Length: 383
Length: 121
Image (tube, rainbow over all chains, first blue to last red; front, top):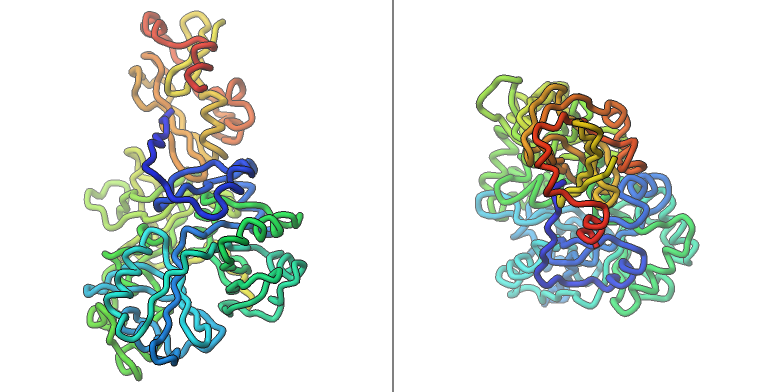
C-alpha cells in the first residue's frame, strides 16, 4: 500500500477545529488548514446522508470579505467590483447573491466567488486557497472606491440537504420564505448571522456566517438535531462533482476562461457585447470574443463505462490507439448517489457533444467514457 | 500457516509455496470506503515491490505492491465484484491474489504480527 505522507507544515485551524477532533474527524491539510476529510460515518454514508437528510460542513477556511462603498451607496461598490468580474453586480438586488469570477488579462479565472448585496455593502465569499491574492487584488484595484474589510472574526458553516430548512426553522430561524440565492443578515439563535440559501452540493441548503465566538455552540445546536450529521471534505467533493460544480484549481484556473469552463450562463447580457456595460473587466476582449465566436474546447461531464474511477489528470484520447491526447480529466472519482465513477474534463468542441465516446488512459490502459450533460445528479434548489 | 506483513501494509499467508496476499485492516481503515479493486492477471510474473493491484476509495487510488516475486496463480473475483469486502473483512475474505513463491528467502525481511503492530502504533 502507498503510505500517505502527512508531513505537515504549520496549519491554520478553523473555530470548529476542537469540534472536529471531538467528533472523530480524520484531519488532513487543505488550503493551509487542518480540516476533516471524513468523520467515523465515512465518505459514502456522509454523502448519502446529505442527499437524504442534512449535512453540516465547516467552510470557515473560505474568505469572507465586506466591500463597503466610500460614497455610502452600494451601487458604487457594485460598479467598482464590475472592473474585476464579468458579472452584472449592479443588478443584484438587496438580499440576493450571484456567482462570479475574478478574471485575469488573458481571460483566465483567478478565483470564483459569491457576491451578495447586503443593502449598504457587498459581501463576498472566496476560496480558501486564493483568499490572500483576492484580498490583495481588491485592495490594489478598488481601494479608491471601497473599504475592503476581511471578516476574520467569523466562521462559515454550510447546512445542506432536503431537511436543512426544517432544521433551521426548528432552531427559530426565519428561513422558510428564502429562495435559492437569497442572502442577507439574519438572526439565528439570537446570533448576528449572514444567511444565504445556497451551497456546493446541488441540494437545497444554507450557508451561514456566524461570529467566531459563537461558532462551536451554533454548530453543536445544529448537530443536536437528529437529522444533521457532520460532513467532511471527502463527501463535499463527491457531492459537488455529482452536482457538476467546478472546483477552483482543478476544473477552472488561470488557464481556463469562463467560456471554456462552460460558465457563460454566469455572464449576464449587460456585460456582453451590445450590453449596457459591455466589457470593462480583465480579459474582456478574449472572453467576449469567445462568447460571440465560440471556443476550441470546453468543460464537459464524463461517465466512465466501466467501474474504474478516472481521476484528475488522466489524459483523454479519441480512441484506444491514438497517440495525441485531445484533453484531460480535471475532476474524477466515485459518485455515491450514482454508485459509479464520474468525471469532468476538457475536450475539443468537436468531441464535446453529449454521447461522444472518448478514452482515458488509466495505469497504461485506455478506458472508454461517454460525454454527458451536467449535472450528474439533478439540482434540488428552492427557486 | 503464519501471517507475515510488509511495511506497506500488505499481509501474506504462506501455504507451502503459495502466498495469499491482502491489505491489512489498518490499511483499509486509512483508505476509507473502498469502491473499486483491480487485480493482476492470472499468470502474471510479479517482481517484488512492483505495483500489482489497485484499491480505490471514493477519494483516491492506492497501489498494492507485490510483497514477493512470483507468478499470480489465483485472484479473488469476489472482491472485484464487491469492493466493500475490503472494508468489512480485509484480513480474510478480501484476500486479493495468490502468488507462487519464486524465492522463499524474500520472506525473511517481512514482519510478524507483533512487529507489524509496532510498525502501525
